[in-house]
Length: 237
Ligand code: FES
Image (cartoon, helix red, strand yellow):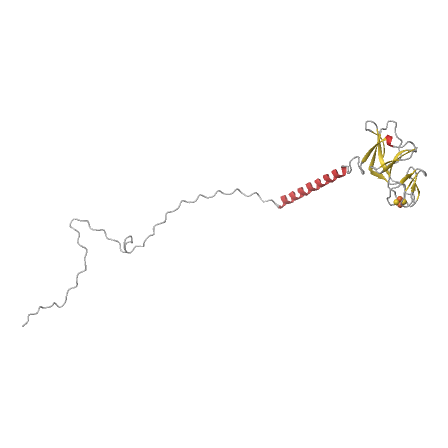
């Protein structure tokens, strides 16, 4: 009969591999926390490491306080003041413009200086000043500066030595030596300019503001005719 080796009914389970026992005398290892390296011990919540805090930014400097708002009353005061200043400037400017002569001396529209020698002798034929557009006459009543433009429609009239009168070629008006109307369609006498008489030192010694005849003083040296100041001849209607 063959000999059999009895087989145990059950094989005891292999024991789990265990940590090798530390050598005698070594310190027991500290228990490792579950979950691997760095894990919190079982039953505790992991606390995140706080991020490194940056230093607080330096607060910006506060801007300067805004100017006080202009009140409605102040604004209206400013507007009123500006309006007054503008009006004053306009008034002054206009006054200066009116005060200044519009024409310079020596040009038509301004004052024109002539010598007393330029005037004719008493009742002699008139002499003319083309720059000032006037005739110079000398009667018993005095000297005059008569505008050279006809009072009808503005033609230039001439002196007729034969008839000793002024005659207009356009429509036939005629005038005396002193500018009085004689005939024709002209509605009034000839116009005349104001003038002032000057002595040798250019001082005014006589003046005719309406251009009427004025006898020449003995010390008269010059006459300044104001071609910007015309007096209309007397109407005969
Ligand atoms: Fe001199 Fe008519 S413009 S008479």
